[in-house]
Image (cartoon, rainbow, N blue to C red; front, side, top):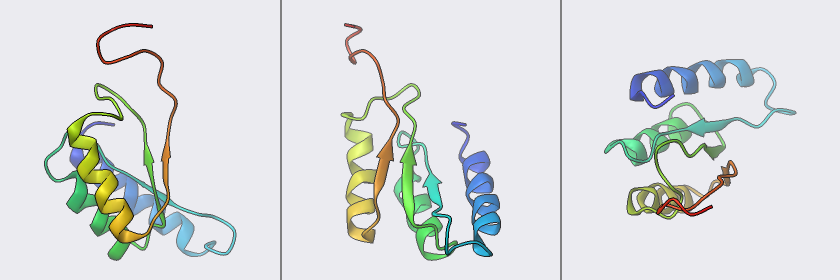
Length: 95
């Protein structure tokens, strides 16, 4: 799900699903860090949709890349937890 609009739509759908069950479900926004609007999309998901965390699934990017640091910093400023899926390998191709 690297497409920005697909991720925004998924976040909106998730917010709607969780809205009536927020006492036992915690919703995590998804963004694609290489997209230039990722940090703003995260802020929108937290402030407008009231999502309460961030889920990162590395796909064609690595958690140590500069583009991800902006997203990490925005998550910290919003005071939300970050969950990252496991990755196997290194940016230079080592395993």
